[in-house]
Image (cartoon, rainbow, N blue to C red; front, side):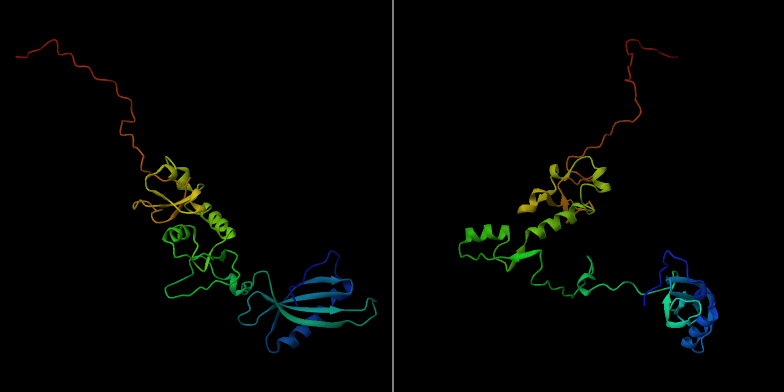
Length: 251
């Protein structure tokens, strides 16, 4: 049973009044553990309600005993106990939602010695078929990624581009917005090969946070190769004029 939910209709007054009957059912299920205060009643439908009682079971802070009782509808019909369960309340500590194993790994989880195999149908990869003894062909093949068992698919390239563009070294980061110029005009910008090279490269300036990282062509920082610092005084200073046409001698 999941946590009970309220319906739009009010609870059946007869069923709502039998609090002690519901408490006795909860006590029978709880055994020697005392049952706490009555926490409310929820209407399931016109012929059944759920009474809630605070639980005092160790390790179950905030949980409630939920006792569902029902009747066939008439005022003289007997009231029956449908079920008694222990359910989490709004402030109870519960386990996080279950996540499939394939979705649990996050960026940065891979450690030294860890293995993270990809599935045969990984949409980010496609087979690489070309293999040649011609060095000229192999040089071009390596540049575009051929000659390997699998290479990046179009989906994989687009996913990488979206991730990089929206990351710390993308055009909308705080550093990029305050930079004097973009990486595309920087001498430390090394363009990537292949189709991703149209928008991405690698920073080679060791004093920047982006050194060794893939950066967007429109990213930028204060260490741009052509950045200049104005060394002039921020306060306007009038030009000084010395009159040396007359010589004053003091005795």
